[in-house]
Length: 132
Image (cartoon, rainbow, N blue to C red; front, side):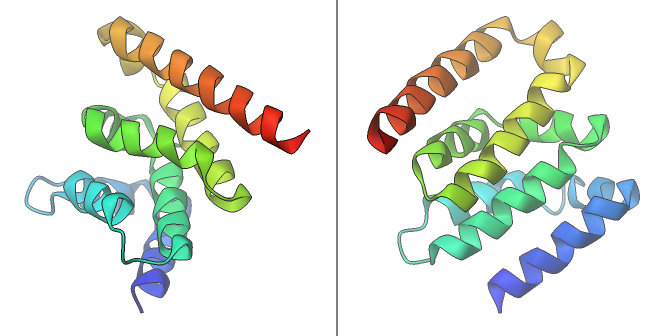
């Protein structure tokens, strides 16, 4: 049920910036909910993959990407997803690409930019080493 709900929201955000902006409203606390889902040890991986897809779809729009980028815990959890199964890693990379493309990351947070680069390089090196 949770996975299906997240998937529906992801589809909405894929086609509508309005849906993305509604999720970024303060009263919804979307970024905190996303962090809790990624941190959960009891949720199945496919729920986390769906959440990563939702976040990636939100990062296609600068306004909602800024909301995602403003939560370092969420960004860190997304980077950690690079170690997960292929589907989760693909969605995490989509999200990170969207965040990097966002001007907010480049201009306002050079330390976050370098941290992202280091995490990505480390995890991609590990994934490539494991796959050989």
